[in-house]
Length: 434
Image (cartoon, rainbow, N blue to C red; front, side, top):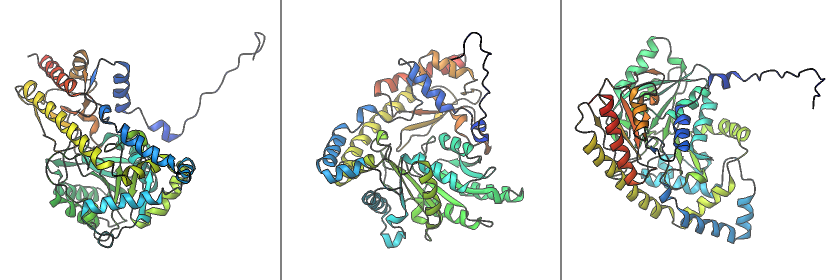
């Protein structure tokens, strides 16, 4: 410790990496902190799962089963393999193939091409690390999952928006985007197309089955300089409330060399277990596993053993059924509240979601829903919060709309969902001077 006679010690400022300096604060961090700081605020912003539906009983049963066998218990409490628990990789592969109506031979996919991760976000991060260099382009829907856009920014890549409609990414818009970027000499920069193919976050749209093969073929045709991959995020696939399931984009990749699938059990079972997985084309497996070993030395073994028991004991399907019943009811509450409080306001519209946990709404064109706009502060004054839609748009390409909002019915109880929409209606009327 320096004495009063000692010279003053000055420490130099830390010098952060270029990557840390270029990666700014993300909007979701601000929104989450606001919700945590004010328990009375009705947050329809966070995409959390409903705490009332978390599978405590099923998880207790699975944990007890893991610990009841000393050999399994020791394996669960020890380091696991970098690629993940073999039996769990077999089980998640079997589920994907069953959902897609394919055999192993038809899919050309085995458990050797499956990697277990700490949630699907780790897989998104690893794919970005393996494929992307500074200045590379990733094509995304406009709007798209804003957390992944932050991942791309951290990797030094740039997101480029492609227009969507009620059936997802528009193939003609994707074709035109490739043509425009080739004309500008930018085609070699494109490394990846990112698509949330079921109940997209934030727009809630599902990519139409008729478009899935077309997207694969467009990407294949434009891979003139190098292999362009499709990263298919299927996080919300189990959360379907109406209509039949449809096959993944990957099932239309006949050569099996184009589509990477990112899956998670956070939305369909428990985010606290942090279990996700990736289904990879063969050339990506070794480099991704090398990167993963440097990152985490293998995802948590205990969580993987617990999830395997959940699957083996048949505990997942009943839980997903209860989850869908709860979310369907809360979705209907939100839609009724929107009809009551926002439908009468001219210029307001939204998509009715058939799954997932979001409603994507357009407000009158003169309303700025962003942090700098009047509506956001008025909504806070009315004790509710939403995600401004403009922060969900890629940095380039299809322009961002400033009059949109993402509303989540996942986290809040039904009565607070209705109260939150009523509060948004009051705030919007105040913003419009009505």
